[in-house]
Amino acid sequence: MATGSILFRSADGRTAVIDDPANGDRIPLPDAGVVENNTDRELRLHPPAAATGGQEPAVLRTGGTAQVTAGSTIHVI
Image (cartoon, rainbow, N blue to C red):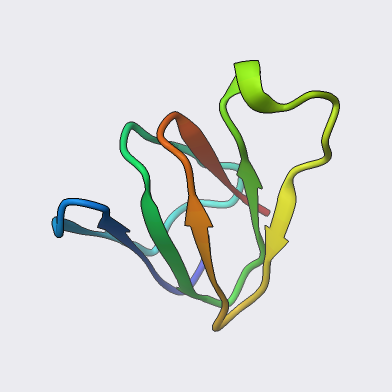
């Protein structure tokens, strides 16, 4: 289990907080926005399947932020 929280701020201003996500969790993001990693784990940010083009997922380290597109998935490592 990760300690801390993941913050997601959607482009329309809504904020979601995911507290203490479990290792291996996959969290779908239906909207575009910004992800902030306030956990003790790395996150992998997977773009929508149609947009991958063979790309590896981005890695978001503790304390980092990243913009994501609608349909992305957060994977807790």
